[in-house]
Length: 41
Image (cartoon, rainbow, N blue to C red):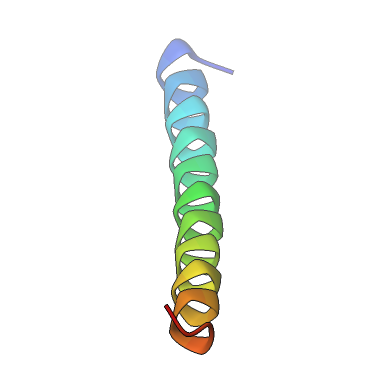
C-alpha cells in the first residue's frame, strides 16, 4: 500500500468517526430537549 493510499484510508476512517460522533451528539441533544419539553419547569 502506498503512502497516499494509507493517508486516504486514515482520512476515510476519521470522517467516519466524525459522522458517527455527530450522530450520537444529535441523538443525545434530541433526547435532552424531549426530556426538558416533557418536564414542566
